[in-house]
Amino acid sequence: MAIKIPPEKAKELVAVLQQITAETQLGALAIVSEAGERVAFFAQNKDIDPVELSAMAAALVSTSKLYLDRLSFSPLQDIILRGANGFMVMKDIGRFYLIGGSTDQKSMPLTVKSLSTHAPTLSQIMGSVPSS
Image (tube, rainbow, N blue to C red; front, top):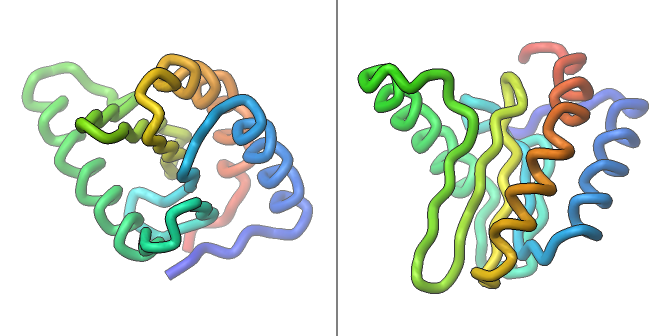
């Protein structure tokens, strides 16, 4: 399921996501809700299923929040996954998560910086989106 964004907010959202894309070397960029509903999705690799990615993100967020609560590390801010062939960063932006991924391992610090820089603006934009 996808969340509909009001047209005026969609323009703002697109502008910020374009800035992130210009600043980074991401192969995937998405915004999903905690429940796994997608708002925005882009992937260079056309084999990536946006529904599957959104559902996995929701499961990862849920598990991570539980883990951090148990360790008294809450609240969740970021989730960073790194494998041999790439990484994924999930940034908390309120009721939603900004997800960026790449196969370029060296770009991870720049990606974290860019997502963190734009997170407050995205949080403000997404905060005005009505709950489904």
